[in-house]
Image (cartoon, rainbow, N blue to C red; front, side):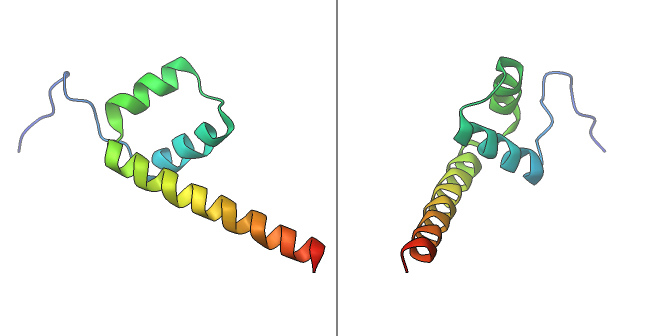
Length: 70
């Protein structure tokens, strides 16, 4: 069994990824959270979650517009 060194950051979980993407959509992030996310989150996972979040946001807006107009 290998022990994690103090230099190796612990990888963040799925909920932390979703939280980072959610708050980033609002543009509300603390510097400490941003630095923590940069060290722990996988950039490819962040991009994928951001694209999925944007698509969901657009779909929700379209559904709201259809409900109001139609």
